[in-house]
Length: 500
Image 1 (cartoon, rainbow, N blue to C red):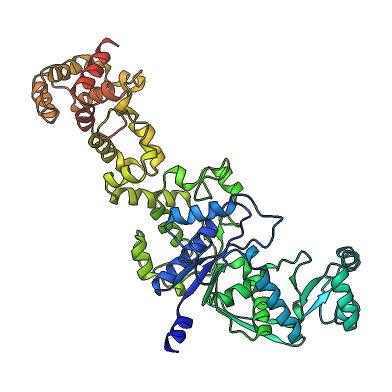
Image 2 (cartoon, rainbow, N blue to C red):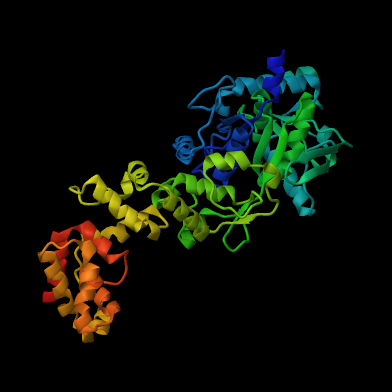
């Protein structure tokens, strides 16, 4: 008995996306908050696929969702691909369960069959609109329609067997529905404001509202953490719980992720217009955060702070740290602006603290264009030298070209600026160093000694060397570059500059 009580008291949360397309980062943040809360309480993180709307189901969307969660490090404890004792975890595979539970409500007098056609209701709805009124099918007019409340039992059975029907929730009049949301406090709604919602559709599939409540109860979900777009549905969900005489889980509705300008929900179109991803992984022709070169842990760090604040000045957290400090009471009510530059900065910080060897092992696709004959050490040295300049891993290709591409031309503005200092004469000294195999770490001291008689600005000397090796003034320390590319290539570039 004690173990049963303990089981019911344990934290169980679910992320329940619909497979109607790619997983948006707003959904990914919802998954993250569920995951962090579960792990901070020693609970379970469950993935449930809500695919009751078969008409909107998109092929490969479920596989994408699973892959995106795994890449993000939010691996479910239970779900379609990992199983669990509360399955099935796809709503399309739970039709018998919903049918059994809808019968329970009908027997309790909490739900009823409705046989009105869509065409009939459309005509009535149009009539209401013409009078600038909102049509509701509910307590005030349900007895005027064709349903099991207005038909005799024998007629109802005949209709059930011969024509399509839906099953509606029977909403009681004069009730006050009071529900507590963990982010926004108590919400009160009068039952008269809610119509008799459809619970089971004509195709035999449950609506989101009904399946959602039944599944959360049967899967023993302790906390429902979801987007604020579901906040208006909260009173309805509470009424379904009450109809079953079930205890509802605790609710938390998360604020929206807003456009960078702050007005409106962040959309795919915003990403297209402003040049940033809104999906964790590539979807069709839309590049994801992964393909841009985000470390998943960096993206999770940024998303965690997009609507939640730990209460400190610290901004960089590993997943283990987020789990330790995550407190849902610090979730903000207002929407959070998406800031791609800030997301890149967080990624930059993670690149700084991650060993080059780890990056090479985990993200080889961002370095696979380097010369095939390069050793692992050389690859690692190049990445380590460029790391402080990178905000995204996909920037590495352009930044690293100076190591494996000889300059074809030289920055004319820089060349004009140093021409009076005779850069070819300067480079001739470095040619001699290379020809004599003098170690690169001695070049600076030797060129300074040579310059004691020449009296040239040291900046002009260094610019000449950088121009000869790189072709412009960008890049990391020039002596480090020379050391990595090696004496032979360095000499070729120096000589090419002289004959240019």
